[in-house]
Image 1 (tube, helix red, strand yellow):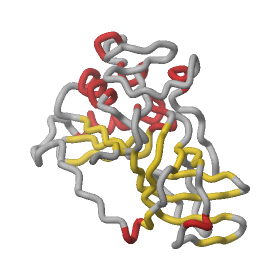
Image 2 (cartoon, one colour):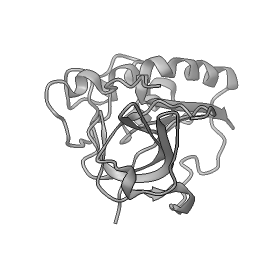
Image 3 (tube, rainbow, N blue to C red):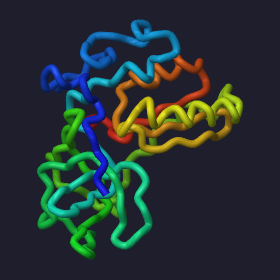
Length: 214
């Protein structure tokens, strides 16, 4: 069930952009910020640059017809399961436990460390089965405080996001005045863009890929 496309698109087309910058990357140029985007259109025109260092992802690794993907979003509860992810390189099932195979599909749930170039994820370290993985809990970016969004407003924003973010969009849900949005990767660019477009205190952007620290 592969529908992946190069979700950073033209932002990576001029060269193989591998350096993380503090600014956003709109299609066709670099070095911009939400202030440079059209009014109320930051999320539609700005893209994070790929991470400079290694990142960690938690998800389902799935190989079908010789293509291996790292699925960071929802997984269909079929058998075998189905999902749409980003291409995964440097992967070998011989080096891991916890996988299943059925009807030509092999899959398993893992924490994977490696690099992400905006198109594909390359594993650089042995993966860890998610059942054995014990990461630190991330801090609550809201501090436990209610958001400023009304339910109808948050649902309207939610409806826009798949078209705005393309394959970088994973899932979202409104809760306690906030719209929680999961994306493949964000370095703060999209959080700033969302605040610029919709106002502070309404949208939380969460990156599925997290930088390796320490």
